Length: 278
Image (cartoon, rainbow, N blue to C red):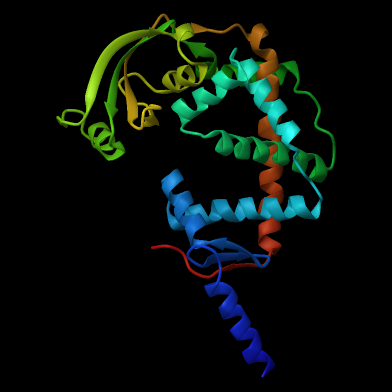
């Protein structure tokens, strides 16, 4: 009788779960089918890959709760202000840029910043020893291995493609010679220092002869940039960017420690994959 009652309770719990039922249970904490579907849509990954991402996030969330780690709204706002200042923008300009270039609302951006800060606090809580500053030799090696990241052109020759349809732009990128009526284009040359820093970073990472990712244009439509040429590429001096390199090395080391920790934690955690979207 007791077994029947438990089965009934479990079935009731699963079918009454929010939005589409439960896909995965992590230490009895649910990940819904809707959450998996949303992750698939945003990341373009398979159901299995998306569930892996969400399981990791859930483990981080539960670990943060267990270690009583919290992130306050003032910490989030301070980090946003720091990010805006780093890009030589006011906070309002930075938020608008992230909305138009990355498609992130203020709420979405704050969620991502909260996750980053929580990750830093989690690292501090689980690391066995304090991480030292990278040596000059480490910084020099990182600089040489990532020269592309520290190089930028004075200007870009681009063709910008606009459309109200993201699917149409995807088709254009897949077959550039195809003419699609609802897509407009414009050729122009833009100077690096004259465009939004977030957009400049995206264009700089896009190889010549390639399309950028599809981005929202802030006008209920979408855009993608075809890079025709990068003019007068210059490489930043090592000494001027040592602080940036040091932060990048520390971030990589921190992420590696966290990845190792949560890989071990997952092996021992009670995780049940009940069903995934097809």
